[in-house]
Amino acid sequence: MTKLFLVKALYNRWANARLAADMAKLSPEQLTATCAVNFGSILAIANHLLLGDRLWLHRFTGQGEPVASVDAVPYATLPALTAARHVEEDRAIAFTQKLDPQRLGSVLAYRTTDGTPMALPLALCIDHFFNHQTHHRGQIHGLLGSHGIKAADIDLLGFERETSAYANLL
Image (cartoon, rainbow, N blue to C red; front, side, top):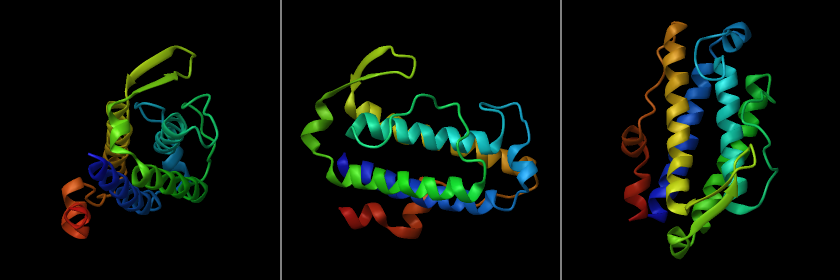
C-alpha cells in the first residue's frame, strides 16, 4: 500500500501542474469570481486544497506549520499559490517515500480545526488526504469549463499511461 500512496503523491504533483497550467489561462477576475461552490471561487478552492494538504501533512509528520483554518486565502495570486503548492507536493512525496508499512495499521490521533479530538486509522486518513485532492481538483476542472477552458485530462490512469509510475515501482 505504501507504493500506491507514493504513486498517488506523484500523480497529485502531475495533476496539479496540469490544472495550474489551465488555471493560468484565466484572468485574475475569473480566478476570484464568486461562484456557487465550496469556498466561493476557483482561487479559494485551490487555496483550501493547499491548506488541507498542509493540515494533513502536519498531522502525519508533526512537521510544518499547523493550520488553524482551511477556509483562508493566504495566496492571492496563482504564481504564489503554485510555488506553495510545489512545497506541499514535495512534502507529500517525501512522506510517502519514508512511510513505514507497519505504521499503516496504526491509529492517528489528532484534533480537528475546531479542537475536537479524533482518532482514525492512519491508512484511511492518508487515503482521504489523496481523495480530498481529487475531489477539489474535479471542482476546479469543472469550473474551468464554465469559463470556456477545456481543461487537460487529469485522470490517475492517464498519469500512469504517461509515466508508468506504478509499473516502475513494482
